[in-house]
Length: 488
Image (cartoon, rainbow, N blue to C red; front, side, top):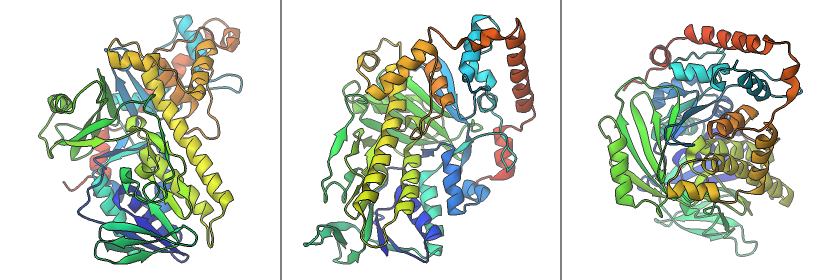
């Protein structure tokens, strides 16, 4: 079976790395890219699922991190999102301890009512380690973590591995896409120099251009701009001025938010905004005024539209990453969506003619996954108490029913859940809802059955154990220097 990957970048090389690693004897993989065409990747923050995908690729963690200048990530600090001076951390760990009858937030809310509770983050190991700037890895680490890394170096690292595993890379710009005149499937990519690259299955990694899935096959696009109207991002890299904290920063401003992604050798900075509320020149000035350290590149403007393709697998074409749809990187989900799509594709890979049932299954799962990410990102915007016009508009929108139901469930009785299609766990929903100042009016009464003082004592014990563990950890920088120091 001949698989052709149209476009490189992070998505293209992830696809190449997985296919050549897992299916080297079953498929022939060719990747077509042009060095003259830039990629969007300006720095990547990830979520813990990346580690499972890396296991499929057979990556050595320390080697990968040194090669990409990577640091560890325990969560995201949200600054100024509910109110201007607010700050909370959405951490990757389990929050407290739950029972079959009720999750930890019910116990915590009752303890808070009794005056016996610390802030909820005190009951999460990853939260406290992030705030203390401490980390430890290895097979026995108690921490659930992800990475920050340099996207350009990551793609180059995956390219070296893929080519060593038998991938054929063709340098060239795609001039047109040729379709089978009989069946309508994609038959070949035709390059500027006239070369034809034929295949049985084509992966569209051409970014926002969506050259195959949209411009050739015309699947259509569902626009979510009425919910998430940010449509611009400016990105710039700066030299590090201090140790890398083990978390991403997402800092709200009056027309959107900005990010800081700390790597070993530099910091990725960006400003996400709505062009209806802030013009490009003002955005550039705002970004440059907010950064620390020497700038390493000129700020780069990225225009985008939030939404999804109506189908991500159409005929013999599968769209990945930006070609398939886009939700702003507030919760670092972009690479996860690529990785889960690739995993599912390998499971459903058609050796022969692709079946309609497999395509329908792939498209349905992908739709539900990106809609769940959309809802979680929108949650941060919708639950705010800021007075800026941009933020007032976000508060006043009518959210999708799927999100409105979750908000009502938590507001009424502190309940939330993780369904089969949800990426984010109960602890994630709880941390963000509480961080955005959604205060439940009631909670499960099970904690009230505990004898007086017992609830507070149990929480003190839990908090003390976490604090003791954190105190024994090395600093994040100490661990990086010993484990995977980048040569830069």
